[in-house]
Length: 233
Ligand code: ADP
Ligand code: 5GP
Image (cartoon, rainbow, N blue to C red; front, side, top):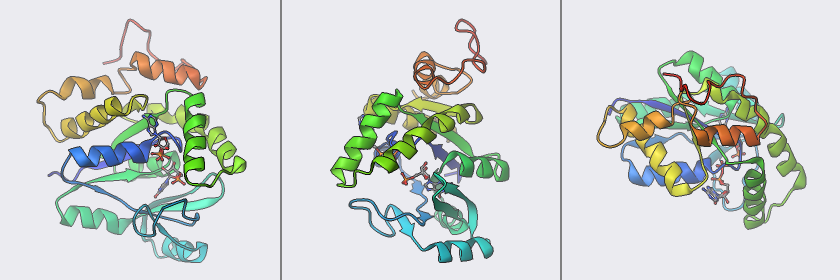
């Protein structure tokens, strides 16, 4: 395995964690970096499994000690960061590494490690995103209007950044999105059997119809898009 770093970003509630979990059952050799965060655990979340939950004091100490590959204050409220040690562990184990990080953190990693492969996941529309956020909150008995509103407001700003990523996929039907992410991972590993075309269709330069439709629903302008009959190379 080549030690590829995959950056995955998506508005909260798009289904990124669900998708990553599915892909990891299908593809071997993919480590997942467990981030540090100062936010409180949700529902059944467990320290050391979804996140390393920590205090602001400890997070600030880790920043001062340069323990992070990247970190960001997300939703203007809590700190989230990727420890450099996650990279070391994946490398030592000969595995590729998935980072689930927000657009600010992704930008830092793209600058520090331009060889990283970036993937943006979009929900099909703001309405679907809201429904998923509400369903998740109810399932976790943590319905907070303030938290949902903050995440919905942030979503459009995040979606606008899609062009900074190499790939984009729309998580509408979970099985299809899973197949697409699997295809991207395998294609980036240099495997061409049956995955090249699917991975290529997810390149942001291809700007597929599904991607255009999702962007349109978020009122993200078409200025950066190529004409319909002329996909970019
Ligand atoms: P994220 O990690 O992006 O914040 P989650 O993986 O927690 O999002 O998913 C948010 C909610 O949406 C969860 O309740 C999850 O079960 C649901 N979900 C994820 N993907 C799909 C999908 N393709 N179709 C319907 N529901 C989905
Ligand atoms: P949530 O609170 O829903 O788990 O995550 C909120 C946001 O924080 C998501 O966009 C998620 O990708 C992002 N996030 C999670 N871990 C990290 C991290 O280590 N660094 C950065 N920059 N963002 C993170």
